[in-house]
Structure formats: structure tokens, C-alpha cells
Length: 167
Figure 1 (cartoon, one colour):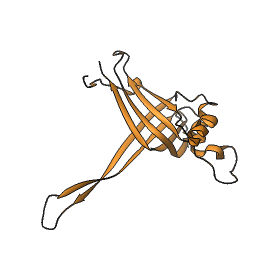
Figure 2: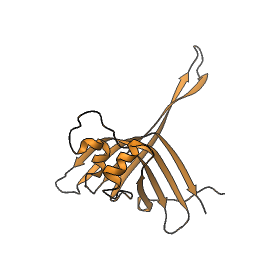
Figure 3: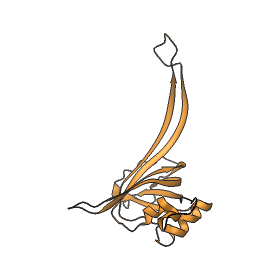
Figure 4: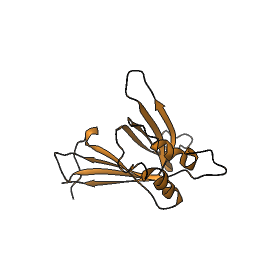
């Protein structure tokens, strides 16, 4: 199988949500993904995904080059801008606390997010990135005077997998 060498633009992308197994996924399904029909996330722009791996460098006294590089923690973060406001992403942040202040502890929903890139001029050639057990960390709402109203979320993911389907 050859490597995927296709070139994409933002117009080639789509973002979908699904639910992982467990109580947090069930909460996302019940509060947001089912009622808001939020499988395909519309009006998305400026999707940003960042995977960081800490590298610990060990230098010995008197040596100019490192003696050893050690892998450290990995973090997966990102953000989404959206020009369609309906409360769904805010409910994915707040969970059961979106309707009323919780009496005790409450679950924050988690979900899977798949970013699919496929150029209509090259059908069958696609690239996907799926983030698993995503949780929203921040939600902001922008109401500019002379521009489109947007919401913006920052998120963390537990892990990521990628898939390419070349010609």
C-alpha cells in the first residue's frame, strides 16, 4: 500500500462525534449527541489538534551533547471554532450541571471526535484522525459587532489514532 500524498484544504474536512463506552459516553449521548443530533458538527472552522511529547534531556558534566534522551508524558490538546450556537458544546463541557446546579458530584461527558479529510476530486483517498475520550476544558462565546457570532472550545483527549486510505 502506497502512502497517502494527497493535499487538502479546510473545504475537504468534516468533523464527527461519537460516544465511547462507559458512563461519561452515555451522558454525552443522552444530553447532547442524541437530542442535538450532533453526530456531524456543522459550521466548524479553525480546528487545531496538537500532540506533545515531553523529551527529558540528560547531559553529563563536561559533555556538550546529551548522553541520553528519554521520552516523557504525552498530551493531546486542541481547539474548535464554530459559527453555529445552540448550546450543545457548552453542555458537553458542563454535562448534567448545564440544566441546574448539581447537588453533589456530576459526570462531565466524554466523546470521540473524528476529523476526516477527503478531496472530492480524488475519491477513495482520505485521511482521518480520531481523538478518543475527549473532554472540553474551556468554552467561549464571541459576539462581535460586525462579524459572525462564534463559540470556541479547547479540549483534551486521552489518545489519538490516524488512518490513511491512499489510492
